[in-house]
Every structure is written in structure tokens, then in C-alpha cells.
Image (tube, rainbow, N blue to C red; front, side, top):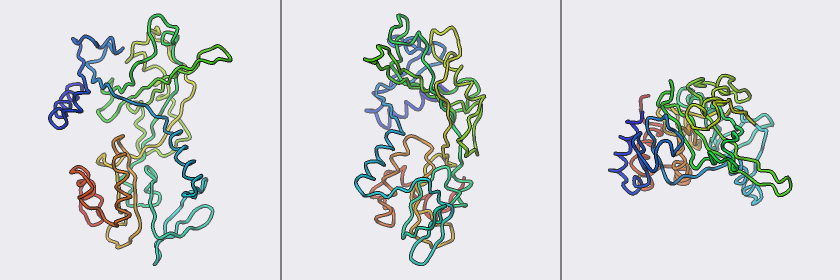
Length: 319
């Protein structure tokens, strides 16, 4: 797995040398930093990227929705699931649990649940349940510790145990917060997710439950992959939850016209199958396509052209 990552970096050096300069390969013989410096002394190697950021998705999405609702540009109807779509002469009718809505154009941002409204996507975008945990940091990783300070990096662990190349675990530590009232330090939770090598979750669309074996794995695994100086004690979880991802068959998102193959229906668009963090680059394309009612190569790179050919209602493709 590590050798594959090194090979990928070599390709990056050829294709985008400026970006590659921000990446460092750390081997078992490396110093400053060493694998021990990175707190992964047992790893085969590490790919270190100097620039990184973390985001609280719920807060970000909540802020976007609040701003749009306050501006009057969005009519947000919560607790109103769409149950089916009906094509009519002048557009579409959306059937919901609270009645019907008519619209000339529909954009589906339904990700893993797309096939509930568009059955022909059933085998193209597959729901996958992922699991997440908020773990209390051990005393060895608190600001008062004299051995291990809080983490300086976020982490992605790949190729550990029986995990495949498509499966990874990911970790970021929340900042510690000093309270002027209680005179105590809180926060610092280890936000650790993954465990799909324990329970892949493929085909599961119910996020009201967690997989207990995966939850136990997440509580124990950090002692294996990371030097916590914790005497291998199982970490305590503040919260454990699951979420549903939508994985496309070929790893690329579906962005564009979503009319059923063999029909001439218009006005139905989709932005779903978000299988990769880089997929955010595709989102503006559906807006461009909606405005122009077609995609043109003027606005897309070579990689995106491949995706848009796949998305064409008349295109043929294999999976």
C-alpha cells in the first residue's frame, strides 16, 4: 500500500510539480520528521502533506441554509420526503408526504437515496453506511501532559490489518477549550471514523443504528495505529453514530441530466454519487448545465469531460 502511495506521488510530481512540493515521503529511515515524530512508529511509511484543514460539515450546511432562508431565496420544507416523481407536459410533479409540488425543472441532490426516486440508479449509486466516533482523549494527550501534547496533524490510515485499498480510517482532534467559569479545560475529542474493514456497510441505508463491532473497533484501534502512551486502554466514547454515503460504481459522481435512458424527458437533473472529497469540484457543473441545458467542453477539464460523457442520456458505458 505504501509503495503504491509513493508511485502516486511520483506521478503527481510529473503532472503537478508545484503541488507535489507540499508533500513529503516519510520512511522508516527518515528523520525530522520520523515516523516516531508523527506518532506512527509501527507504520510502513507516511505521506505528509503540510497544508490541511478541517471542517464541521453540519455547522457549515446549517449556516448556508440559514443564510439562504433569511435572504428569501430559498423555501425550505423540512420533514417532507419526496416519494415519487411524475412527468407532465409542462414539467414535473413531485409527490411528497404533505402533498404535491409542480416544477418545470427538478434537481436531485439525494446521493445514496437517489434510486428511491430514480429506479434506474439502483445499481449505479449504492448506499454505504459509515461509522464515526467522538472519543475522549487520554490524559497523556491533554495540554497539561508532559509526554504527549495534542495532535499536530490529521490522519488517514490505509492498508492496516485486513483493510482494502478502498477502506480507510480517519482522525482529527478537536481543539481544547479553556473555560473562564469552571477553570477547566474541555474539548480535544478524537474524531475517529471508518472501520469499514469490520463492517463494509454496503447496501445499508438505515443510519438510525450503529454496528457494535465497528464501534468497538474504533474505540480500540487508535492504540494500535497511533502512539497514545495510553497503556493500550480502550478509549471512552462521548458519542457514536453512523451516516449514509452514496458510492458510485466507478468512483465518479453523477452530475448532469438524469432522464431515464430511452426517453426524451427534460428538466430532470442530478448531483449525486459523491464518493470522493474531490467531488466538490463537480458541483458547479450542474448549474452550468441547467442554465445552458447542455454541457460544453469550454468549461471542463479532460477528466470532467470523461464524466460528462458518461452522464449523457444517450451515452453507452460499462461498469
